[in-house]
Length: 115
Length: 113
Image (cartoon, rainbow over all chains, first blue to last red; front, side, top):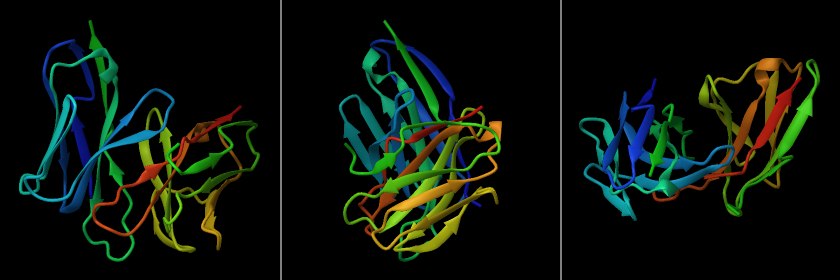
């Protein structure tokens, strides 16, 4: 059974600093997703990582995937207050065919960026 | 607007009651997924439908059921509601293809009193 673990679960950062959120998954997965959620809101897709070594960047966020280590990271560069949110990673069990499989989520990392 | 529509946005009901949550997927998406988000359990997968057929089940209680209709919209039925069922319920949809993602609706906040 696929399990996804994120750490840290809570992260308080100062503006301008860098930090990394880690996402480990327990069994082989086809893809790795990162989502952002603001309080009481929906999940906004950030990145889809499809293969080993994949790296994607959008603004101050960069995500990478190491399928051998079953590890994905979300790196935050020079944090700003607007990045305050909860970040989720999610994986799909790799034994799906045909339709896409269901996402298995980590518990989320609540990021607070303080001036 | 993500293209996935969920109604209602908010629902307050009493214990023991039954409610129906509705989801219209993004145009062209055949798969619909239901998730429950609560403070203590996080985001839990409930059930998936693909083109009208149940495809996968997660941690869905027997009191809960779902279906997907020929026009691909889906309904999640929650019955004999308990206080612990209070949560945000999300619907997501997807289409076949490695690069395509999952699009989430804005959710239904259910409060059981």
